[in-house]
Amino acid sequence: MDAGITELLAYYWDDSDYTIESVPFGMTNLTKIIRIREETYVARIYDPQTKDVQRLQFEIELTSFLHQQSLTFAVPDFIPTKAGNYYVKLSNPHRLGAIVRYIQGETPNLARAEHVEEMGRTSGRLSAALRLFKPTTALPKLMFHHLDTLHPLSNAEILKRFLADPPFAMNVEGAPLILSLLEELETYKDELNALPQHIVHHDLLIFNLLIDPDDRMSGVLDFDFASTDLRVMELAICLNHQLQYDDSSLQAVQTFTEHYTRHTTITSAEIAYLPLLMRVYYAALLTLYVGQHEAGKDVKVPFHFLQEQLILRSMWLKDHEIEFIKILNSYCTTELTFTENDTYQL
View (cartoon, rainbow, N blue to C red):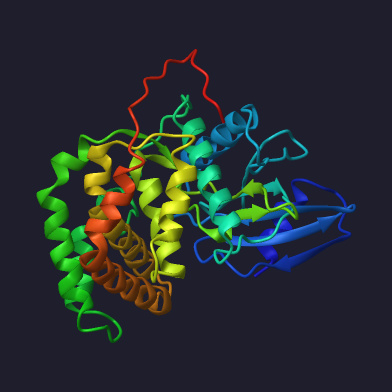
C-alpha cells in the first residue's frame, strides 16, 4: 500500500531515512504522515475519480491565495518537488500525488462552548476570504444541490437505481426519504440556483480543524472538495455537524451562528432554504458514495451512517424548524458587495 507513497517521496527527497505513519481518516484518498529530517509532512495520493490535474491545480492556487490573506489560522502549504513542481504524476496511470507541511493542533471538542465559538469564527473568516478569491484555473462547479457534478460515476438517476436494488440491506425508511428529497430538490432548483454563490470548503468538520493549547484555531485542512457552490451550503454543513454531535439543544447552533456571522453574511433568502440544504447535504454525500461503489469500493458502512443521519436530521427539523429558523433570522445580515480592491476583516 505504501509503494505509491514511496514513489511520491522520491520526487521530493533523495534521503530514504523517513518514517511513514497511517492516519485515522481518508477513504477517498490515500493519506500518510511523513517524518523526515526532523520535519513532519502530509503525503497524499488522490482518487483519480475525484481529483484530476485541473482540480489539483485549483486547490494549490486557492491555498496559495489564502496564505496571502490575514488569516488567524494556517492552511495546507504545498511544498515543491526537487524539480520545483507542486504535484507529481505517478507511474500508476491517472494517479496524482502531493505533499504539504504538517500543521500542529488537536481536534476541537464540540462539548466545549469555546471550541464551538472558535469553529464559528473560523468558518466565517474562511468564508469571507473565499468570497474574495478570483481563480485563474478554470474549474467545473462542484455543487451539492446539483448531484450530477459530484462524481463522474454517479448522479441522481444512478442513486435512484442504487436504492431500487441496493447491494446490501438498508433501513426501510431510507429509500423513500431519499427519493422524496430528490423530488423536493427538483421542485426548488430554480430558487436554489438564485442564491449567492462563491467558493465553499465543503468539509469544515472537526476532523479538518485544529485547535491549539490556547483554544484558538491553528489550522484548517483538506481543501480537496473546495469549489463554487451556494454560499449557505457551508453553514448547512457546519450546523449538521454540530447537531450530529448533540441535537438535544439549540445552544450550539446559536453559539456557532453568532460567531460565524461576525465575519460573513447570511441573508433571509438563504435562511429560508437552509433546512432543505441541510438534508440535501446527505443526499450529496450518498451520491458520492454511490460513485465510489461504482468504482469498486466498499461503501456499506458510510452509506448506512449517512442514511441514518438523514433520517435523524429530517425528524429533528420537523420538530424544531420554527425555532431553528427564528434563531438564524436573528443573525440575518445585510448583503455586502465586494470588489477586487475591497478588504474585509478576517
